[in-house]
Structure formats: structure tokens, C-alpha cells
Length: 425
Image 1 (cartoon, one colour):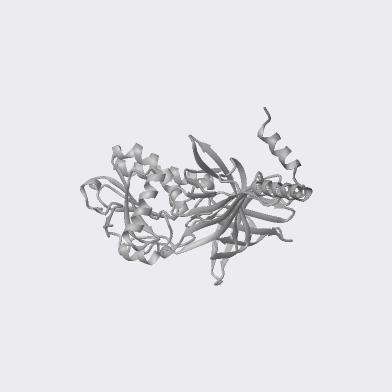
Image 2 (image 1 turned 90 degrees about the horizontal axis):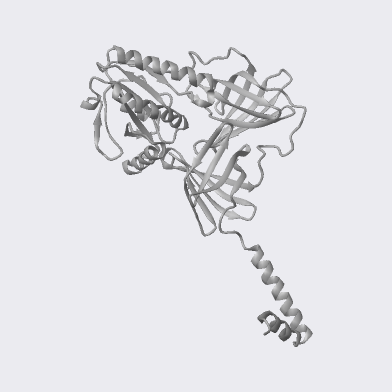
């Protein structure tokens, strides 16, 4: 018995030449259309992802994986690998919400990668939409072809940052280099720029990072005096010029504004709703005769994520020893329900068990008004230590996260010593 294919071929052979030619052309076109159809799901593997900032491409590592039948993303920057599990793939699109943030990715699946945008939620609920692309199979950071004769930028640098209004602020850069690969971070009086990764090619230095929170891009060069000069961008709206000089003794000690009590004998007091709308006061029974740590921050703040990652295991170990933690969350939204939803997601994604209260909007002035006994809030997070008698014993502005290496270790040691001293009293 002849197959259907043989019958069709014989039938076509009996047709006039013009008909056979037209049929062949239609067959080729049909095949080409089938081949051109975009894939409906992303390829599993590594990508070179970029965000398009005013200074150009800000790359970060991206990996698409499948775990237990579901898609998972990994964002890589230096030693950091951020796992993203809130991922939906359908109808040739991929949507991901970054852990602990309202920020999200929305991209079309293409044959050679992904194309779309990353949306960052800013003050007042405004959306900052940044163009996003990812090319499958590419793994370089900035330069596909590295150079062999490159400047050495490793070490500690004293940095002066100048914003577009001409205001200056100090910083310290910590850089490590292996061949043309550069990693490190930049410390400021209120935190750090987290895990930066990049390359040096000749005298040109490029650094970037994105792990779901803020996006940074540095363009620097080594000038004739051996200094690093250039500029950096944070997202689409913030830009500063950079001038850095090598200084192994560079420090931020005494730099920046710090929060204090307006009166030495003033007591910290507040009542705010938790993420379920239930009022919580510092005078509640749960905090009485306890060492209380009050941290002021927000789900949008990457350094607050770093602090929460440290406080989570600490709280599990110390809550039975007489320590309580309460986080005052100043969110992007003025509407309680939207702010509370952001806090609930933050708690869920980061595994937070201590109290989180919806205190206000992410504005230093609003935070200062809500806590009038303080001189002001100048950075997120700000951490307040209260003894068993309810007296404020110390206030720390900012947080140096694990990207800062020895500075993070020093902060942890001082934190633990401070808490243990208060517990022993």
C-alpha cells in the first residue's frame, strides 16, 4: 500500500509545471513561516542581561532554570546570586517579581533571548520603566574581547561624589581585580552600592549591578595622575560625578548626618498599624522589660534587605533571651492597602518573623514627622537600640552589607556586643 506522501507526490507530478512550481513555493514559504515563529518558552541556561540606563548598558548575569517543573531566575553580580521564584511563563512572555520588592520584569521570549522592560516602583508609587534585553549564551560583562594590558585598580579608594546640583559627598571604594575582571563595592555614609562587577580594558573601568532593587552603572577611567574619574548612574534619574584617589586609610568615620535624640532623656514612642492593620505600640506588653531593636526602613531599600537577612537568624536565636525587633516600614505608597501589600510580600519573601509596621511613606521628612523625638532620619535603614528600661542607648545610621567584607564583619561584631551588653544589665 502506498503512503499518503507517495500519493501526494504522484498527484503533484501529474499537474502542469506552473502548478507544481506554485505548490513548491507555497511549501517553502510555509516552512519558513513555521521556522520564523518565535518560541513560546525561554531557553534554559545563561544569558547576558542588560538594563538601558542614561549612561548605556548596565549588564548583570542572568540564568533561567527549571526546578520542580517551574521556571526560576538567578541574577548574578560578583559573589551574589539572587534567586527569583515568582516567575510566570505563558504565551511567549515571561513575568517575574523580584523577591521582597514590588519591582518586576516583563519580557517577550525571542529566539536568541529576551526583550522587554524592568519596572522599578519609586516614591509616590511612580513607575520607572527601564528597557531590558538578554542574549542567550553570552556570559561576558561589558567587553566580549578582554585586553591583556590593563590598569591595576585593585585596592581602597577615597571617593568624592558630586551630584548634578554641585553637592559633594564622601565615599570609599573597595575593589578587587583578577586579570580584567573587577569586583567590589562603594561605601557611603548611609550604606553601600552592593555587589558591583565589571571589567577593566586598558585605562577604562566599567562596573554595574542589579539584583532586583536598584540598578547601578559606573563609567570610570584611570587618569594621568593615577586617579579614577568618571560618573555613575542609579536607575534613570540619579547621576553623580566620581573622583577617587588611592588611600588605604580612607574612612567614612564622622562623615554624614547621624540621627540623635533631641533631648537626652527623651523616650522613643510610637503606635503604627502592622501589615494586617492592627495597631502596635512600643509600650505594648510584648516589648516590656525587653531589649528592643527598632529599625527604620522600607521594602524598596536594598540595604534594608541586607539588614533583614542578618536580623532574621539573629532574632530566631535571641527572642527567647529577651530581645524584640520592630521594623518601621516607610513605603512607596501613601495608601495603606498598597503599602501593606508591599510589606506582606517583603515579610513572605525574606522570611521575616519580627514585627513590621506600616509607618508612612519613603520620605525623610515624613519619617522625621512621625518620630518627632528624633533629630531626623537621614538614611535607610536607621537602627535604634533600646534597653530594658525603655531608654534609647544608641542609634546607628545606615548599614554596611556583606558586599563590604570586613566592614560588614565589624558591624556584626559591634551589634552583637551592644546587644549582649544590654541583655546583661
